[in-house]
Each structure stands twice: as C-alpha cells, then as structure tokens.
Amino acid sequence: MESQTFDHGEDGKFSSLEYILDESCSRKSGSICLSRHPRRHPESLFLVLVLDWTLFLLLRFHLSSPSAILTRSDYQLLHLFTLSCFANLPVPLSARHETKMVQFSLTSALALASSLFAASTLAAKSNGCGSVNATLTTGVRQINVNGLQRQYTLKLPDGYDGKTPMKLVFAWHWRFSRMEDVVTGVSIQPWYGLESRAKGSAIFVAPDGINKEWPNDGGRDVAFADAMIKELESGLCIDTDQLFSTGFSYGASMTFALACARPKVFRAVSIIGGGQVSGCEGGTDPVNFLQFHGTEDTVFPMDKGLELKDRFVKNNGCQAKDITMPTNPGQSTRTDFTCTKKKLSFVAYVGGHVGAPLGEQNPLAPDTTWDFFTKST
Image: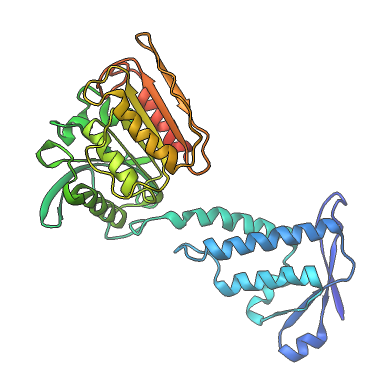
C-alpha cells in the first residue's frame, strides 16, 4: 500500500496524519481508496469529531438553501472521509472526486466547513433575492386582500441591490391617522425613528388602516399583514428571519395582535402605548417582546398595558418581576425579565398617551427599539 502524508499543523502541536492508498479496496471498487494510518493523536481525533458534527449541521441546515455550494453527495463524501480518520475505514473516491479529495487535509476541511456554515445563514433569503421579476419600488402599493382593496407605503433603503437580504420592519399608525403620518413623522420621528437608525439595513412598510384604525375584525388586518409579507418576499430580497413590527396606540395594539397570531413570523415586536383592542388570536407562543407605557396614559391606563406584558411573561417563560415605576418628569425605567424562551423588556416612562415617549426628539423609544430588534434571536 502506498502512503501519503497530510500536514496538520505548523508548530508540532498536531503532527502530520498519514493516509494509506488502499490498493485492495481500489481494485474492488474501481476507485481510489484512502485509509488513515494506525498512528493517531487525541488532538487529531478531536478535530475529526468537530468536523463531522459541523458537516452534520450543514447537511441539516444548508442543503435546503438555493445557494448551496456542494451537493448532498459531496457532503456524504466528506462525512465518509472523517469516518476514515476516526475508525481506519477505507474511503472509495470516484474519479470525479479524486482531485477534490486526494489533497484534502483536515485543516482545509475545517476551513471549508466553516465557510459553508457561514454561507448557510443565507438560507433565510426570500424568493425575491436576485429575481429578474422583482419590480417593487419605493412608493404606495395597492393590494387586494380577500376582496378588500388595501394599501401600504414601501420604503427601500438607498443602495438597495436586490441581492442582499434586508430586514423588514412594519410600522403601524395610530387611530385617526394615516400611513403618511408614520412616513413623514407627525408627532413622532419618521418611521418611529427607526429608519435613520437602520442605516440602510432594512426595508420599511407603513400599512394603511380601513377607516384609520385596526380593529382586525375577523382577522382581516392580520390577513393584510400576511398578504403584504407574501408580496414583499416574492418581489424583494428580504431576510425572512428578520421581520419586525412596531406601532403606537392602535398601531401598538395591531402589533400585539401580530405577536399573538404570528410569533414565528416576526422576530421581535415593540409596542408603544398599546392595549388589547385588535384581538389576540393564538397568543400562547413566545416572541421577543418590548413594551413602552406611560404612567399617566388615560387612553390605555397602566394596568391595561401591564396585561399585554403579563401574557408574554407567561409565553416567554419569564420569571415574574415587579415593574419599578418612575415618578419624576423626564424619567423612565426599564425592567428586563429573565426568560427561558424569548426576551421581554418593559419600559415605563413619566407621561401620557404619546407615540414619542419623553418627547418627539427623545431617543428613548427609537434607540431602545432598534437595539432590541438587532439583538433579538
């Protein structure tokens, strides 16, 4: 049998592994076969196990991606190669794989697995990524939802290329207002202050409510959200794992309804001065949940706001904790809960029913919301 050495380190910490060309196996299979030399070291075995588990994860999560670099047979071949290192098993290599594998060391295998694992995160790409039929642009969109004509404003970031998956943020207006008030910023910063903080990393949507409100009768407004998501994901390049929702008052209530009904669609929600007036279909699954509520809110008094929080304390597997209420003008307190499933934070501020807690230009809600969104998993 002919042997070949594969370097496995530069400083002697991991000595070279020696592989043997198994002529008997080669004659039987008509392929090139490699076996690991009986000499081995614990450190090398550890690397083999790390590689094999990495390949297992890639098989599970990466092969479903339209951007997968290798085929299933390629991964199976790499798996056999690691088993050879572990158990002295000969690995048959077809002529197709000869060039690919004869010079294949464990170090290069780990490097390849690492790069493929990073690429596997692209599995969250929407169907609109790179599509030649993607024609959606910034502006007002019309959409028919179960026989009702609905509309929303779409805002693409500068430099949008249609290939890089973007976050998708829904910003719902309050009662007796329109989507334009969210876009231009009426008593709030435009897009609740989030668009400027996204720095080109997100697509923004401002839906328009029927009769300027979100009663969600029969789930019609949740269906509206579903229809928008379907249209946007097919026509734009969106990271489908990074959908977010926020709103004030009725818009906060609509966001709460989505937290209840679509917790697996939205990664995180931010609720500003909301109550349960848009329903809560489902409402038993966890979602990353951030809430702001004023101590002097007379539309949804504090106890009504706490009811929303309490539901997701339970859903998110959080330990019960009292909310510390601020007392002086300009003050706010944040209570972060210890949870086993998803995150939950409650921000109480001194003030009434407003979409911009502590003032229109105050960064409390925008900064806290964007930080919460980007750190949610």
